[in-house]
Amino acid sequence: MAKVNRHIERILLVCVALTILSSAIIGCEYFPESSFELANESRLPKWFSLPAGLARPDVSVTMNYYVNPWGRDGTFILYDKKKHVLGKISAKLRGEAPLSSNGFPAGPGNDYPSFEVITANGKTEIIEHKKMEPVFYITDDPAIWKTLMRVEPSAASPAIGPK
Image (tube, rainbow, N blue to C red; front, side, top):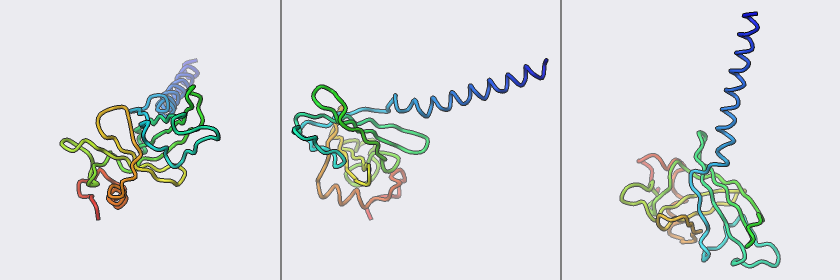
């Protein structure tokens, strides 16, 4: 009888461990690290196109950042004015931290503007955070693109900067 109880205890322990692990992985989708709205004056990210009959003022985009053990991700959701989901895209953020305009990780003294190089469906965008607010912009500034697209993918290393 004692052997049966120990066997059941082990099975329960494995089930609890699997439940906790899967909750930690799946739960990240429901608890973003941060959430932002696309500025009304900003264009849509390249991976979204306007549905027929709608103009840019008729839609909004929410972006959520997630920090996982395997890297940083983002989710972009396109809504109409009634908050119906028109599209959803998962994206990969480059590096381990946001970047400043010189290509180095943003940090004390150069927090804003900060930038994220994000790729979804093979298309890359540079997201700009102009100041500490829940708003983001899509940047088309050629100088920012030139600098940030020449930065090594591991932006966390202090030895990394523009080539």
